[in-house]
Structure formats: structure tokens, C-alpha cells
Length: 122
Image (cartoon, rainbow, N blue to C red):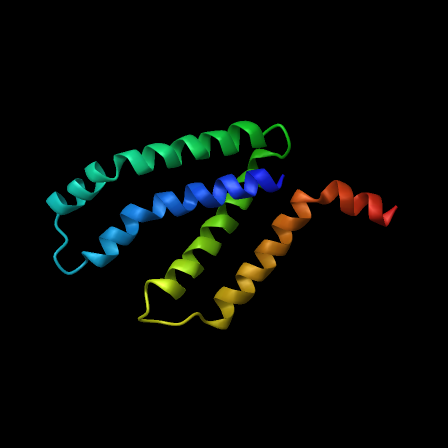
């Protein structure tokens, strides 16, 4: 199960690279520049798509599709918080973002380890 979370985090990190380039180029961003960024990052987005395919393809044997989607959202939120903290220095996290992430993360951990939790409670 941890393998799935690592795969989805890696896919999410890779898919953020074109987004970060867009943020860095926001002042002079045009459609042409956006298409150039998309073209130049095709190998990265190709690998990210393969990782997403592995995540959902292997994960559906272990969890329901909505659970996988929730896990992907938590990975995206985690990566977004880290990116904002490391690369986008113009604002700080607010309490609502951090509490929302914590609640969602605990929910995903509960989904991932539901059998172990059930065994502990019995």
C-alpha cells in the first residue's frame, strides 16, 4: 500500500513541473510559451502519466476507485503545500489549509490501513 502512495506522490511531483514553469513565466506567459512548455515537458508528463496508470491499475485491486482518487488528492495537496513552501515564497500557509490536509491525510491513512485497524479493534 505504501508503494501506491509513493507512486502517486512521484507522479504528482512530475506533473507539477510544467505548472511551476508556468508560474515562473507568469509575467510574460502567452499561448505560444504555454505550448512550448507543454512540448518541452512531454517526456516528464509521459512518465507521470505512466505512473498514474500504474497507481490506478494496481490500486484498484486493493482499494475502491473513490478511495484511490482520495489518495491522489492527498498526494496533490501534500505536493502543493511543499511546492508553495519551497518555491512560491509570496504567501504563507494558513491554518485552514494545514488542518484540512491533516484531516484528509488521517482519512487516507485509515483507508490504507483499514484491515490492520480492524484487527487491532477486534
